[in-house]
Length: 198
Image (cartoon, rainbow, N blue to C red; front, top):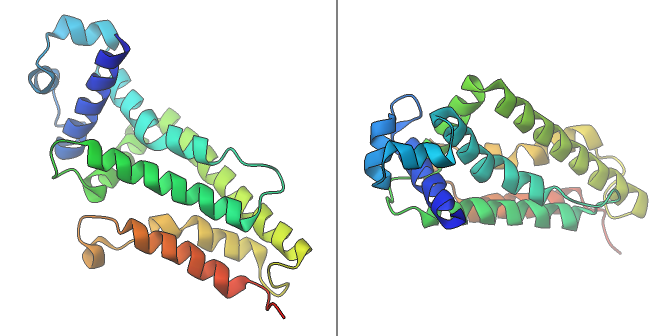
């Protein structure tokens, strides 16, 4: 049963990414899943529950897992967590059969989800605030231990790190996010703020 539920989530996410939530009907889902409406409703009470489950699974849960870090988080730990998060996003995209699913249409879907469902938006906002706080903590900890320059504005730098993964320009990178470039950006910014080692 769990496998069938996971299959429904995966296939529905693929369809939502390609067509959008508002343009995807229950009939579209039935056809894509090759299952009856009764079977679909056995696992999900309605399409909204299925859609919200997709958003939780593909966006919120991986980030929540990545942000399970110690209070005195280091910059290396924080960057490692964000790299694992990016890896999980990239792996999710690669699992879809239809290769037209890309970061561009998935990001559009995410913004649509947060507009339509305030509960999802609130969860995403809490995770964004947690990430920002962890960057701030990592920078402050690095300054206390001498790893990061003391003339760095911790708040501004934390904001810069938090926005790295949101900064890709689809006009420059095409429809696909350059995950390696994002990882290099984390390391490059860290290198810029590191204290000079004698």
